[in-house]
Image (tube, rainbow, N blue to C red):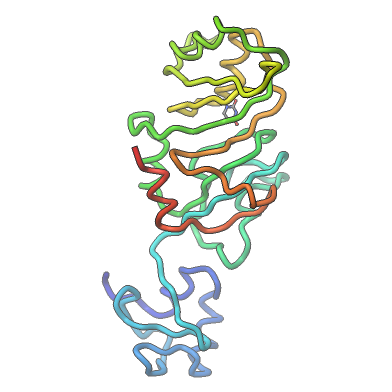
Length: 238
Ligand code: URA
């Protein structure tokens, strides 16, 4: 990786602003390969140089990937005046410039939202061509019939004429109202519109997985954490 200024490198990881880095440098609290740097414009390679900030080894990663358990009432956008957004729920320790949700859930839908600053990765997991399944649990207002399940599996035609890709659907409850649905695409209000095309209404919707990565159910609604490399791999695994 090309060398970059220390203030840029350190501020890019979220915990300190550029002016805080300047202060730390002044106090001799930023070391590169064991030596205090004299100027925040000093250049280093964050991937190969050993950097210490305020007494702690500085872990650098070019991008960040965050799993959020989205609560109801929060908007899947980077900015939405008057509303709380998924980015507002990211704590300062994980905040970086350029964070956005890779895929949207409706305001009243809950569950797994992936937040990142990596546009290429977001494209990978959202493109229907890449076949990264998104798994939802939906509670319907009435039991789903076998004929309707078959419709989901062969491709529901929405009211506007759009033919959905085949989806997988599995009944999870005795009353037939709670179902698991797996989609390879993410059209606006897709599951609600698929259900509506079958004469049903979705009362509750929760996303439980992206690819082979399940939502960590120990995250309470509104909580988030960074993904591990292994978890990132599970998202993309075929
Ligand atoms: N389908 C919907 O209708 N809403 C969502 O939030 C996600 C999938």
